[in-house]
Image (cartoon, rainbow, N blue to C red; front, side, top):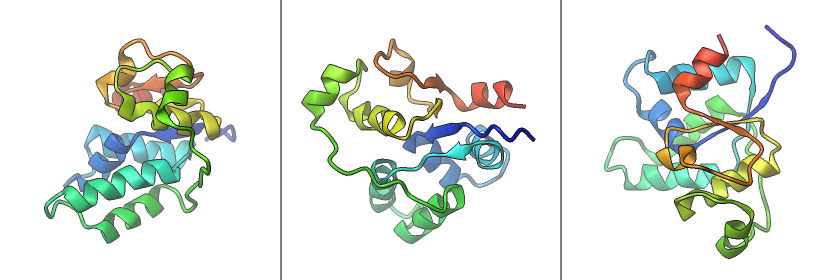
Length: 145
């Protein structure tokens, strides 16, 4: 295994799928496990908040405490980003179809991530202003055997 661990932001949609998957062979679970083993997952308070919000709305799919446990499996330390700019400022910095994804891009920038793993189609529709490479879980697995 290479000593050059890259910083990787994992989008909340991949973390949620990882957390609620019933078996280990889903693409999302394999990608997250590969990231944990080979790279450095960059889990921020922004991503954590989205995952916990899902747990509260999930109608029993996953509890808040179980989601917290899953997040700790991925990264022992949650990176706290203070003073998050308002969406209007983030819109000037990034171009993405959905405003709800602006803070994920900001998370990747602040943590100096080299890769973002996401399965959100908005990330693959001409995103601008971010230096990280955006990859779907399958692409991440193929590029990182």
